[in-house]
Image 1 (cartoon, helix red, strand yellow):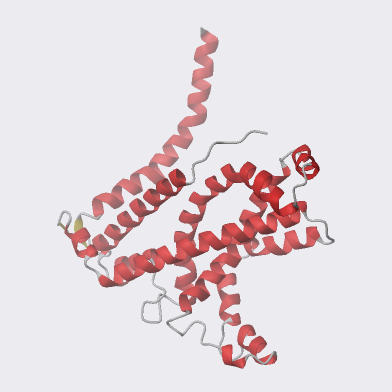
Image 2: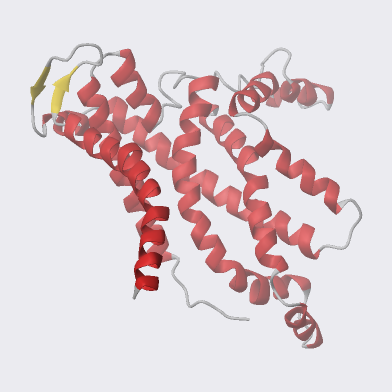
Length: 296
């Protein structure tokens, strides 16, 4: 009996600090954001006025927010698709491929995750520079000067320039996760598939992909949340939402409203919408991609 009490006290002593910190730094701020979204208030003064759902009603008619929402959804979809495909492809090549220098390529792919977001944005700012940038210089050198563009100035392609930077930054991290899953697959399964006459491509789709699918599903939520957060940082540094709002995203627009225009309550309403949207999208994607878990 005394031993059980001692165990419960030990568990409580271990969990209490974590629960307290989560309550103070996560639960309370989140609840406070929901509460502040119901007020008209500035970010400097303490003066506030309860307006109920008026901030949300205004938000639904805000064409700049709706454009930011469209841009955010486009970025989430394209970054997720390209990152998953390329990360799984490179993970398969580096795990199952038979060529020299695999460790070198692993390091090369993972380097972007070591660098600061500011550094990465600076690198792509230099690459996209219309006059001295690496991309236009390379196109000129190989005789494709007609393809040179104002990569961060053309409203039609600027968002794709940001998407490319986001994909480049994310591939290495998820590639390592998928490689760890592939390394856990027993070699016997690959040998059995080979004896049955399966090609490398067929083995990938019938053995590798089904057995790492649960890991891919888990990372889908990471894709959504991290893309929403990282798109804000990349846009803030590379374009600040320009030109003409063509790269404006959820969080950058929220930041401008709350801390630039001083309409703090309205900015918190945007935060609530982003919070609900991200979790709802994660739940829908998780449900759609649900499959029977395969054991090996």
